[in-house]
Length: 476
Ligand code: FAD
View (cartoon, rainbow, N blue to C red):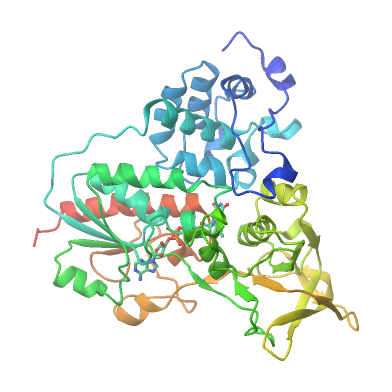
């Protein structure tokens, strides 16, 4: 592509992603973004300056060879581009859809200094979808069997990426999953309109074809402990990837009223109990039709919950966040889409109490206005209550989406594993080794709620360390 000068590349505007009309999509659960066409992808790829030192790669937690794959796209070799991405990322169709690119690779993109950065995420998604549609998922080569057994606890992105690397290395891999569906937050948390379940299912299916065994409805700590997996079931190593699925509440009066949900419960009911396919499936969730719904929080989970309530028919779907828009941690695209779909945002406001009727049903929330003070430990400006600014807002349903912590089951049943005071497993960051011999951990259970790509990166780091460990361990 050398015939196109840098100057001319800089003149090409960032290509817009075709998407469903906002009014229509706010009434269905189909994917919002429709993906680049081949022409759009090639045009977008031409915007890449092919920098001699591609700093974008330093923004990618798994080090995808961004410059190389984009060059292949610009030359029309989409399958070659897919293969190049998969050298470092086993779930590109997922990451292309949900990674916070604006804080990672695209934030570092040199084009972004003067213009909008190259749409790296959209190109990743295009390439992964192209490969899947043309060829299905291509299975990698597997090394000869080693006779070693590894148990992976949890089937989210950390567990799946670790499983992918270990099965290819020739080990026997079994993934234990507490829920009846595989994929972790990718299926029970992130809604269909952002990440179609089929995409995760295809990736999981590829792992099954490679020989990974999946055991659903298996809560490690109840069905078997980590110790039992190692001593009784003779697993040579264990990778703990149980995520951070325990919802935080606000601890304000009225949180036990009917109509108050945690985001986890609300989204799990909609995603796993198929309320998103209403009326084909009768929904086991609050009937939002014509109702006032308020979601508290400013992250991706809050955006997913509020947009879900809108799709379930809420008359007023509203985000209330205690800081300002600038501090909201959600992906920019999700906020933008939510606004287009008619979601209302109320900033600098905090709930004090939920109010209910005599039958225990939520009827209103008492709110207080806030202002921003000095930055706190998170680096964001601290919200401070404004005196005498309380007011009430009538609501029918609310979702609390202020974050998640770790479930204590593993901690309670694995006494020789070290945890932080917040219940996160302590690991060596280079290897993901825990304090217990043969046990590794990664993803949200180590970092606290983070991102898909970081969880995947941890899974791959652990797989490498498990390989090294098994190479030096006797088989049972
Ligand atoms: P998880 O994905 O949580 O998977 C852990 C799995 O372990 C679960 O399936 C759980 O059922 C299982 N498990 C738990 N305990 C046990 C046990 N005792 N025995 C067996 N199995 C067990 N990140 C992004 O990058 N972009 C986004 O847009 C984004 N949106 C999000 C939206 C929502 C609603 C949520 C909740 C999170 C979002 N995140 C997003 C964060 C991201 O999904 C997580 O950081 C990531 O999924 C963590 O991966 P994990 O593998 O560590 O854990």
